Length: 312
Image (cartoon, rainbow, N blue to C red; front, side):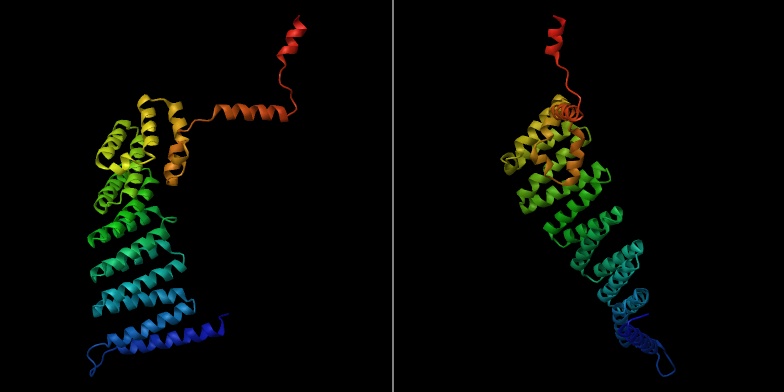
């Protein structure tokens, strides 16, 4: 049973749809459809359906409304209608189709010269979809980044490229992640955002180490020390250098020890997860836990002194 207010809204929506259809009809005395009036009626109907939670009807009408707006040349408003169709499709739990409608909205914004709006849309949608489909999220982050870059919004572009890189990292594609982080480094260099560059350089070094290429990791480190005084003076620089030293020595215990430093456990979570692969079990803690288990189980540890007395 619909709430009586919802029933009234549904009836109102249906009336607006009927009126809109009339405006689209032609006759001997009316050669062209009245697009403006039809768009206005369909827009009102969409609002009524949305309030009444009739998501399917709202979606279908929003798509029809978008086509009319495209005919009229109103690409920006057509993009808004596709956004509304996408939101209704999300409510219907059809996320792949929702992603297609959001992408269409972004394309229409770009076509209408609204690159800023498209970049903002792609960023917002990427965040929503990264838990559902990482491939869609990566695509949206990259599209948003390229648009921001075209509009000379360098800070936004760097941020979106980095977010895309973090998602790609989770797929295990280290070369592509490295490529994007190099792009981020270049963008941040133009902005002189050295505070962020330091962290990105660390990520690039770690990626080389994950890829078992410590020589390339050392090259990135040495180049950063030469090119970025702030990196060379960074208080975390020494932690990175002694980690590289451990890899140069191919000493797994030393690598494990140096990875345990608090700094390496407080960076991007996916990097922390990958770093933990290098951390070996703590033998001292394992011995203490085993001793504790033996004591609590009621079994007394062996008393070698007493045995020596018995042998005498």
